[in-house]
Length: 149
Image 1 (cartoon, one colour):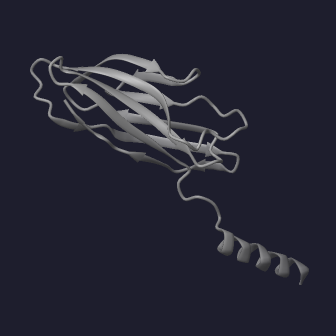
Image 2 (cartoon, rainbow, N blue to C red; image 1 turned 45 degrees about the vertical axis):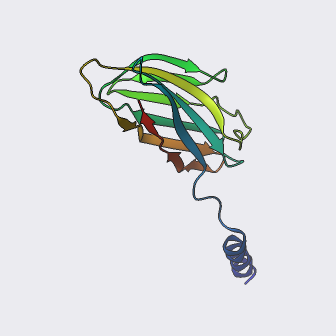
């Protein structure tokens, strides 16, 4: 009987207080464009949920844009181009601490438009996202920003 009572209390607590966040954190992509030079800089930020310690997003690079440079805006961030015309962003591990809840810019990528490309509004869609916390892998959100060149 004691086990059933404890289980009932635990189940009620989960219903009342919630089992946790459905989304562990959110990536956001925004851009700074220069139509004259046909260059665009894309900045990727992440805002944690107070629990997430590690996160990653892979973004598809729109056709017609060529990666010129990747730069970490926070020491320890991984900001790279990967095969398949994608870029990868991995904020530095929280190493036992949650990543900041405030949106933090981790990476910037510089692109140029190919000469023959007619690039208007483009967006960087995630092909993979993941967040990890002490209680396991969680779903990450991604706010897509339209990039106007």
